[in-house]
Structures are given as C-alpha cells and as structure tokens.
Length: 579
Figure 1: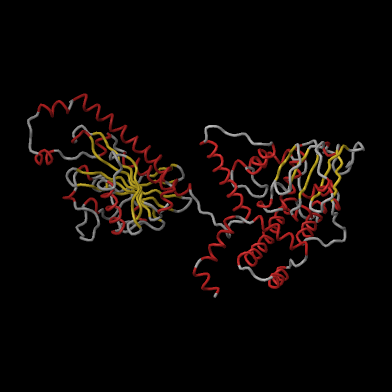
Figure 2: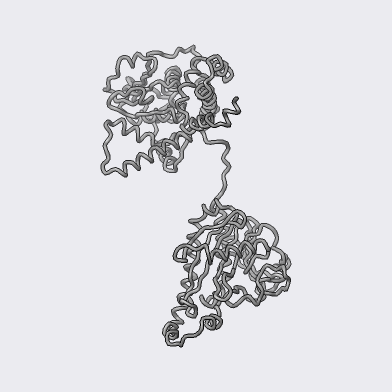
C-alpha cells in the first residue's frame, strides 16, 4: 500500500511534532542512503519475521538529529527539539524491512527525507493534533484533500505523572492519496491501530501507577505554592515515549507494527477488472433482491404480518429470493445451488432430453422459449422443481415466473412455469390452447423404462413422461434459431455439460443484445413497421418464431436499462444529436 504511517505528539514546548514514521519504497533507498550502508555495517542486526527481513539502516545524515546544517534539510533544527520531540537518538541508523516477495522496502525514521513528503506529513501531524479532532479529543477521524493527501487519524492520551493533567496527547496517522482505498480500509486500520494504542497505553499506565505509588504527584502539587505559568511550563520538560512506557525497544516494535500494517492493508484489498457492463440477468437479479429487501423491511416495520392469501403466492415469493443457476449475487445462494444440484433429479438439459426423447424435448423447449405456459403434473415436488431449474436456464432471468407447486391452476399471466398435483383439473381451453404445454408424470407401466442409460437413477425408472400441447411443434418446422443452436450443442457429445452451460450463456447474451436493439428501435425511437422489418432481417431474426421470441424476451429487460434509455431520449443533448 502506497502510504505513510506516522506517530505524532503534541509537545507543550514546541507544539505538534512527528515522532516516528514508516514509508513504503518501491525503489532503492532514499537520498542519503546506499546499499553499501546496509550491507557494510558490522553492527547491523537482521531478523526474519512474517516474510519481512528487518535491518538497521545507516544514513549519511539525519536532518531530524540536526547533524546537517544544510538549509534545504526538511527536518527541524536541534535547538527546536526536546526529549519529548525526539524518537531516535543521535546517530541511530533507523530501520529498514525488506519484503522478499514483492521487493518492497519499509523504511522507518523520524521524518521523511523527501521535502515534499515531509511537508505532507508535517501538515497532517498539525491538523491531527489541532483542528481535525473527534469529540472527546480521543478517537478516529478522516480528513484531507487531493493536493495534500487523505489522512486517517486516531488521537489518544498517554499517562504521564509529570504532565499537566497527568497525560500527554499523541496520534497515529495514515496518509495516502487514494481516498476510496483509505475509506474502504477504515475498519481494518481502526482495529489494528487501536491494538497498537492499547499496547502503548497499557505500558504507560504501569509506569504511571508505579510512579504515583512511589511519589504521588497530585498531593505534592496541591501542597506546592502557586508558580507562574510560563515558569512552570519551561521547567517541566517533556519526557520521551520510551521513558513513559519503560520500553527501550519501543521504536523497533513500532517499526515492525507499522511495516506489517502497510503490508497487510495493501494485501487485503485487490482490484478486479470487470469486462464490460453487467449483464441483463445480473441487473434483473439485483432489482429483485432490492425489491425483496424493501418488502421484508416493510414487514418488519408493521405490527402484524398478514399471511398470504394462497399458497402459490408464498411459494412464488420464496422462488424469487433464490438465485438463478448461472448467476449468483449472494454467497449463500452459491451454497444453495451446490446442495440443490446434488439432489436434482434432472442434472442438465442434455439429461432431460435423453429422458423425454428428442421430439418431446423439442416441443417442450419451443414452448419455453416462446413464453408459453409450461405445466408439470406430478406427485414428486422435487422432480418438478428440478425440471424447472433446468428449463429456466434457457430463458433470461427477467422472463422466469415460477410457481413450483400448487393445488389449483394458476393463469398464465401469473407464471410461465407451473407445477400441479395430479388431481388438479386444468381448464379445457388451456389443454387445447397453442400457448400451453403439459407434461404429465405417470407411473411407469414397465419395471424399468431406461435400463441402459439410467440404471443408477431409480427415481426416474418409476415414471414415464407424456408431453402434450394444443399446437404440437411439427418435426420439420424450422423453429427459432436459438433452439436449433441449443439442440446442436446438446447433441454434440464432444461438449461437456459445463461447456454447454457456457454456450447457453453466450446464446442468451447474443439474443438479449438483439432484444435491446429492437426495444430501442420500436419502443423508444418509434420507427415504422417497414424499418422494423429491415432491422429484423439485419439481425437475422425475420422468421415468425424469432420475432415472437424477441417480443417475449423484451419483457425480461431490466428496469435499469429501460429507464436509462428513456432518460437518454428525454435529455436535450440526445434530441439535438438526433435532429
């Protein structure tokens, strides 16, 4: 993560000061350091921890220590620093950690060597300990801008028996230029930085309690005569953080913590490249989930929940909450789909075609693609649900309306997939209609109908399937183009079931793109029929079955896409471009 983590302190003598900072380097060490400085020192100490190699670093000069009189040095002069403003002692080499996996160096010192970085850290330090403070003066806050970077700051107090109010003010800040990344890392940074602060406060509290036990300062101050404020302030020099915590290895521990924080925070979030806009199935699924969420919130807000008027309504609502087989937006739906496949009676479209037979399957698939009502009558509800899960893969998500099982017939406008128990009477006009197909699951007259293909599937051996319709599809009928391509994929034994599933996804996307063009051409632009017929010829969908399919699939377009088109048409810029 390209960021800087710094520990800051509000000194009573010099104001806000940067005590210690860790930065990320993707190149050789910054100015004032060389590779020979690292490898050539005899006092160098190296240790391995978490895949990061840590070593002391010798710099040619340290502006924070006042070793250089160069006016261009960004650090404060030695005269402007006290014991509380200083972290590393004079001549201290600083720290460097090498990440062997990514060839990144984590460098820790009191101030950044680069003047521009020093200015950014200095400004963030001043703001975190002055104006940008959360209520109570202790806690996290976010501030910043595009020019000076964005800052996550967490202010806190450290106990000090010699300080005014018996505490001193510190802050840990994280600075980076990517605002979105920093905001998304807020929960992670808050938890880890809070852990570092708790450890510092715990060590300081032990020292504070020991000093108070030996020499209570509160009673001593009350008994001391009043002294002028300036005299008291000048006489009460700040103590170093190592003294307050009684930890000589404090800065090495902070370097390790800050380096790990930068590495872990950069590894937890990764960017993914999305190829193209979301599909229509994805948009429709998101809209359904949003509607269900609003509906559930409305139920939670009401005092009494009304029960559904009939069983199909409740089942239909449950069905909408499940994810489609090829697209899942929620992790729970993925596990549901996997478990459901294990219990499925029909494993795939190819499996169903083998069970029903080529001609019966073609008739059934034709009615599914045309949007006609598909009715299954069976006692086994799992078999009906499995059949619908397989057949729905041929349609866009927005075109699927399922009532898995009902004790009464439901009209076609309510569902295009309907499961019924065997005793339910279907109206005669539905049985003779060309807009419906009936699949009756009956008890098999023979002991085994499919002894060669499905010896292990005892559940299917018990049934025979009768597919009827008022308008049977003739064997020599061309049918919609997508149906012919689906059958070609199913009959090609060289294609696995997973490859056939991907073919279905590609075919649906291809024809949904044609649906979008036709929708804009006819509904939005309101073109005449002659132009529409020319467009259908260009799209390769001039045949009657293809036209019916496009019109039905048009009902599956997402509300997002439709509203986007309508808003584009109403905008002044689009009308001017059309004119």
